[in-house]
Image (cartoon, rainbow, N blue to C red; front, side, top):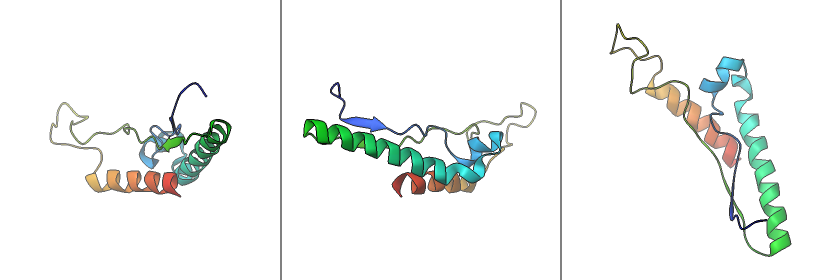
Length: 99
């Protein structure tokens, strides 16, 4: 209650790309929905106690892959992920946070 108007979800790096390292890519949507629900419940509780609105921010952080640098020193043009794959991963994460 100490003066925070915004609460963030604990979903930093919660994309299918990053979660594939843990064989959890099929759980990304549920993880984001669950995190958003917990954060909204917490914000609503504080709003009810204080009478002031509180807001939730859905955290969307980087993945463990990059389009800007090659992971191969021998092949600087190589990329281990496609732009469309990143779009799909972030779309899935955003959908879960918004649902």
